Length: 57
Length: 285
Image (cartoon, rainbow over all chains, first blue to last red):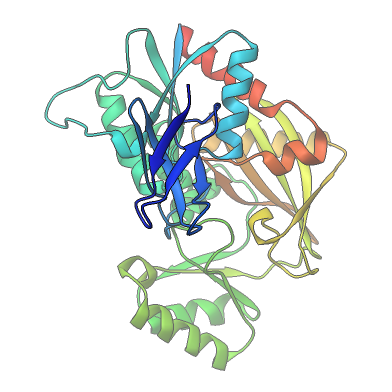
């Protein structure tokens, strides 16, 4: 089933690939915003978190 | 039996872990740490039925630490445990653990004022290395070669950094000729060890800084040192960083959220598989 969501930055409708996964990072094809898939049912995307000072291994 | 997996974003490592679990017929319940709202005043379950052990892959150290504390309070086994993360995530505490276990490590001092840090730098001698006690991927490291550089760096840390940057972790510079060793320990096994070669022959070898992995020949000395280092921080799934120095092998740090795409690319070893099998064995206990 085709899944789509609206870019929170530019409002472009984005079609997600069939194998889309929770937590996947993608770029908006229109504005290139870095987005994260937060939910698949229903589909929700939001701006991906930025790398913070305490990120890493 | 089902494993839980807690993560911030779908990194290559998370993808490899999920694929390894699927290959082994191990069910995994994935939860984004952004979705966690945890009770602290009472134990509360955040994963579904059948999950007793959780693989912690949060990208953020602070989220991982607090998230793990609450999950353990709710009765889950978390890999790696809060105790292990607390120790490994703080370089000062890790160095203290090395000292207790008599693990060779570079000469290291801690100071709480720029003046104290300057004294520490004089004690270890130039060049000296300044590191944040909490930090990863080779970020915010500074190699200072003289008083001018040291004074400038200490002033910047003191004025511009958060309160944690006023904990001055000072270490002797150890020449390692543009490479170090990363070993991944899973339980009581050194699963893989490889060289990390710095991108430009410089002193920072992290893969995140463009370092490249190449294969190395394991020795019994290296194996024993890595297992000892893993044990002294509490054990689990750990990345051990080792320097080859004139004074012999030295352990620099232990990473509790070890990344392994570089290790896999360099060696082809199924590191994710080992990790998943270890997590499953913990879940079954």
